[in-house]
Image 1 (cartoon, one colour):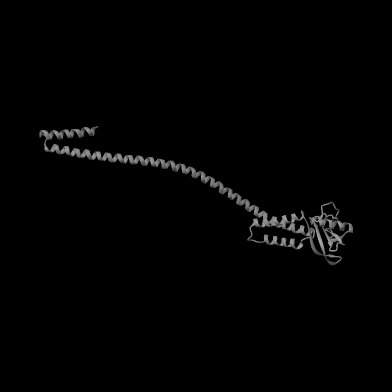
Image 2 (tube, one colour):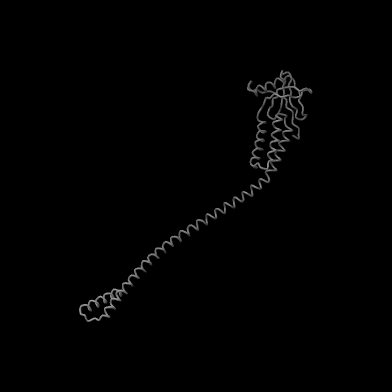
Length: 253
């Protein structure tokens, strides 16, 4: 309001001076100077007002940025906490895996030792194949570059194969010694329970005595039942009840 009054007064003074001619030249010059000063002040005021608006906008932006950074900082703190928990869990699993590894390798060695002992005490069937499997397992366990998981898989696979031997029957042709004479016979395996032989002409049959480790001949009656069992295993005969000799296992087997 003061600026407007001053500017108006100066204008009136200038007009009065021009009309009456009473005002002196210095007064006119002062009025002009005052007008210039007022114009400069107005320009400065406008400039300051623009700067104030810019600063207000910048402050608003800075506040928004501060809020955004506060939000992101909180979010990243939660992220870091979660990652720290994940890292701690991975470290725990690593320690546990190392512990399992330290316990598992000697355990696998023990399993293979027991498996080899069982094969030696078991019925004498597929000796070459089963002996080679044990050798393969020992080579695998001694292979430094082989992953422990693969070693475990191979041992479990061998155990599964040995387990399956107890669930199936098999007919094979092999050469065994009968009375000190190598003789080609048909071998019938009844799971892991018993092993029977029969000569090609069917006149002589017997079973394996796992205690004495010898082949024991049987009577012609049992010989006929062995042939029936072979036929049933080969699906050449309907299943029926038969009687077969079975040697009792020793106490230490």
